[in-house]
Length: 287
Image 1 (cartoon, one colour):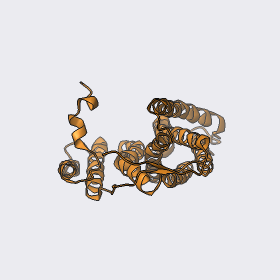
Image 2 (cartoon, helix red, strand yellow; image 1 turned 180 degrees about the vertical axis):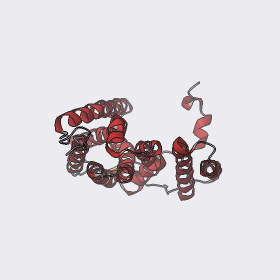
Image 3 (cartoon, helix red, strand yellow; image 1 turned 45 degrees about the vertical axis):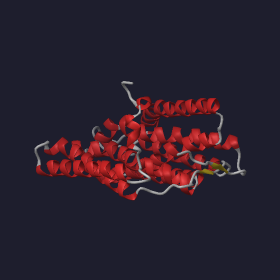
Image 4 (cartoon, helix red, strand yellow; image 1 turned 90 degrees about the vertical axis):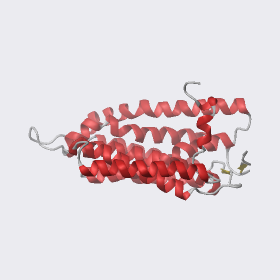
């Protein structure tokens, strides 16, 4: 079913592109920072193996679990509102990460940041697609969007390395905790970029495609809870082992919920994921 996309006459096309490209760069920077700082986190927080895995895993969970729903909400409510929300949450998540004193607080900060990135990825792409009706031009702007995503992946480790080297104030004695850990500046920089995205978005064009759309809440809940259960089991197995009862139960619950998700998607009129796409050779990896 083709969608009717409505684009606001107000706002600037240039500001829309700048906001979208900046947003996807920001999202990828914050996405890659936990991996770039993994060793630093281990030295700073002294977490368990599972705790260290949760820091990066929680961010990815925020992206994977809700990304499809954020795209649909943008279609229904307007993409600009979702871009505001994503940028604002990125400010909050980045500041919380910069100030985090413990592993638990860092995990919570990554959850907030992951949700923010999960909003920014699909919304930034749909905003530029909406203002580019010509198929060839749209292909070019999507390729450019992907280029800025890759740019974020390049910037993130450089940002982590430079801030750790330039701004760290070591403790007075050998082995003493740092007076200030420079990696925290990387998250303050990310928060500043998020503020810039928010300000630029004020002049961006809004767009929506709400006709005939509604949220697939049963599908979203079963997918979210299923993925969370599977991720919980996988992370906890790092310390407890795959034979631990809570790991086995979590895998079983996650598997049941994901099977239920597939059943729901095959029966609902407005599925979260059109499973029939996987039967189309155009979407097949093997062709």
